[in-house]
Image 1 (cartoon, rainbow, N blue to C red):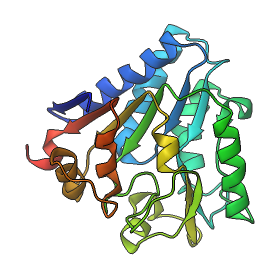
Image 2: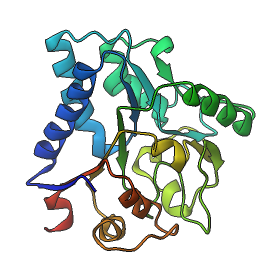
Image 3: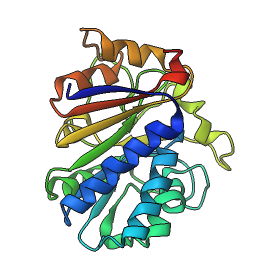
Image 4: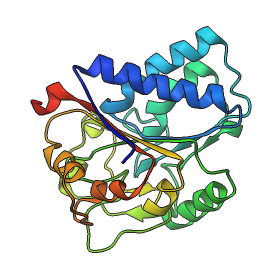
Length: 239
């Protein structure tokens, strides 16, 4: 593990994460960034977008990759990862389709859609930065706990805990599953930035701090990556 940093609050953690995002783009005009969704990276995206616009960074050569997506929802549903990223980060930056690799939540054949994304992802340079969060059940993206994990993009059956995700509270449709990059694809990242914030994620954080690896807690596998950076909001965990 490259670093395990504790921050006094969500704002300070987010500011540090925003700096990582901006630095990756500033240092490599053709950077590839993999983006998680949800509360943990939300403020970091807003802060990063503000800085990118203020510094007038050129994004024409940057590729953004959506980490995962729910299936069963329309593209316009506010609960999708698609809408989240376009509203909170990519939209304000004017990022177009040509610079955005993403799963289609309306895909009629999720397996074929995952194959399409996997192929396009394989053709990209290794990501400069992969932004991740901790699931309440220890999932990584939508790589759910199980006896085995997939290396490449795949459709995911979701546990009840995941179906209770805060993003889905106001979904207009019923989620039938998910699509996600696989663990092997995430490990292509030069730096994996894991943001730990929010209640109910103590199991994942515990596994990051002990010496155990367990596919029943997929986030524990991140310890194998030499470029892992973990940013923790101390207030969320009583540290």
